[in-house]
Length: 287
Image (cartoon, rainbow, N blue to C red; front, side, top):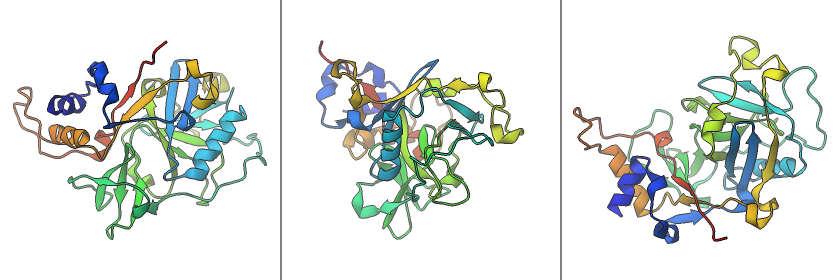
């Protein structure tokens, strides 16, 4: 188990033995919770988070099943910040009466989830940790929890009104913009294909807030599907390390205390929650 934790801390999850697939420290992702976003560069896999934003996660399932996103694009992409996709923000963006605005879903009662705290100090919250693989935070009184903005976090865009999100979404592609914590409705995280998100063409943040003016220069969303809707033989099967497990605790300790010979200067024994998302693996199924 210690060797497994070290492998996780070093990012070596791909080399785990097949026997580890039965390890109870790993949970299977529900195909109903997986959005498969096809772009020219490959497939972006998002695990939806009903524990924090059931209405927003449900809206994304509905819109994906409606085929709404097919042929739209990532039209606002700011390097080091976010990639935003959907119908667009320009004057010609379409009205969507079938997708009325949603009430913001920003925090949940702490007793409604299993929050595993970290011992490391954080600049934005009294306590940080994880919920179901997602980096998260807790307030001073310990009665409220929320997901935090880390690379791969997926949330609903909105206007100035906190309750104005509909189907415009964004994926964090840079250093976590933690100033957005608790004011945006986070509904998932990218668990595979982040390299395809990073490959999206960028806009100029100094011009129209990063909106790519030429539609032909934008990366198209070829399709967005719920994995459960695919034929069973075509559904991908992912496992996510339980962040309340001893294995993940050992991985955090190994990342926090870097004793490898490479470190001739020992770093401080501290890690950021954004640097410790739950490891994910794609599981091969029998033919």
